[in-house]
Image (cartoon, rainbow, N blue to C red):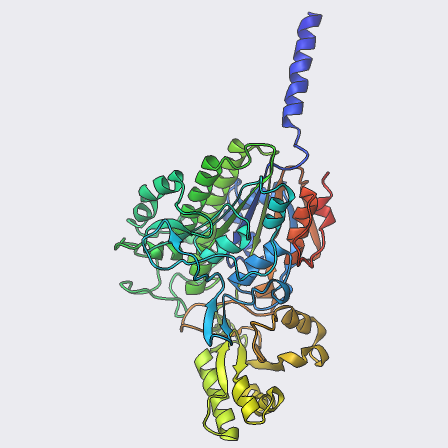
Length: 540
C-alpha cells in the first residue's frame, strides 16, 4: 500500500513538473490586428465567444490605455513601431509611401528593386525590410543566439509581414491575389518550402470566395452597428447597395478576399500551417511568429467602424483567433508560449455619420489641397513648379528652384500659411524645421516630431480638426491623425507566466518591444525608446 501511495505521489509530482513553464517561452506570437480601435475589444464583447478575445481579456494581462506616440498612424509605421520599440524619427518608416527627393519618385515602404517575387506568378512583390533603418525585437532574438531561433512573418499585406519579421527573419509571407498564392521574395529564399506550395495548391482562398459573405449571426443581434446600408458605405461593382449579402464570385484572382473577413480566416489557417511545418516552439530555443490580420483594415476603410460589416468581421476574427489560440495550446502548450495582441492604428468614425449626429466633421482631398498651395505660390512668385510633391499631409518644396530664386522654406511658409488655414477643417500649418521652437501644444508637438525623419519627410505639415481627413474615395473612412480614435489601441499579453490583470495607466506602443526583451532577457532593439511594462514583465 505504501509503495502504491509513493508511486501516486511520484506521478503527481511529475505531472506538476511537466506543467511548470520553462525559464523562457518556447514561442512568442505577435498578433497585430490592422485598424483595431481599443473600443472594438469591448463594443462587441457580448457577442464574442469564450475562446478568443474574451479569453485573452480574462486570462491575460490587458493594458487598457495604450497609445501611439507619433503621427501618422498608418500600417507601415504601426508595425515598425510595435517591433522596433521606436518611432519614425528613428526607424525611418514615416509612412506607407513617401517622396524621395533624390529620385523625384514615390517610395513604397517595403520596396526593394534588388529582389524578386518568390512563389507567385506576378511581377510585383519585390519586397524586403531594407527601408527600415533600425533593428526589431525579432532581430535581437536572432542576434542573441546566432540565429538559432526561427522567425516567421505572415500577413495578407506585405508590409504587415515584412516589417515585424525584421532584417534577419527566416521568412516573411504575404498574399498575392493575382497569383492566388502566399508569396515571399528572394531576400529570404530562392523557392518556397514544400508546405507553402502544398497550402497554395489546396486553393483555399478560391473555395472561400465561391460563396457570398453573409452575416454570421441573425441581423437583429448586431445592435452595436448602424443600419445595414447607409449612404457613407462603399458600394462595390455588381452590388445594388452596401447591404448584405456581399457577392464574392471568384474570377481568376482572389485579391478581393482581402476585403472580407475570410482573408483573416485564410491568414489564421496559414499561420497554423507555419507553426506545424516550421516546428515553431518545438524545442527549448525561443522562436517568433508575427501574424497580422489585415482584412479588418480593408473592411473598415470601405464601410466605417460603425458598420455591420466591421462588426461581423470582428465576430469572425474572434472565431479565427480562438482557433489559433486553441491550436497553440495543443501544438506548443499553454505554458510554453507568450502571445501579445495589439493594433497598428485605430480608425476615424465616418465623417458623414458624425454629421448626422450633429458633430463637426468633414473631408477634403490631396488634390484640392495641392491646387490651393500651387495657386498661392504661383500668384505670389510666378507660374513655376514650386512644390515637388504633397503626401501624408506634408509639402515637399522644390528646394533647387527656391534656392535659384533666392527664396527660402520660411518664405514659402509665409505665402502658404493663411490660404491653407482658410481651408475647411485645417487646424495647424507647421514649418517642420521650426517645430522644436514653435508654440504648438507640447503633446501634439511631440507626436509630430516623433514622426519626422528628415531624409524622408517634407517641409511643411498640415494637421486637421477632429473627424476631418483627406479622403481618397467618397465613401468609407481612414486613419492617420493624432486624435485618440487613431492612437488608442488594445494591448494584451497572454500565456507562459503572464498573470491575469488590468493596467489603466498610460503606456505607449513603443513599450511592447522592451517588455518582450525583458521577458526574453535579451537586448532591446537599437533605436528603442520605450520602457518595460513591469506589471507584465515582472512575471519571473
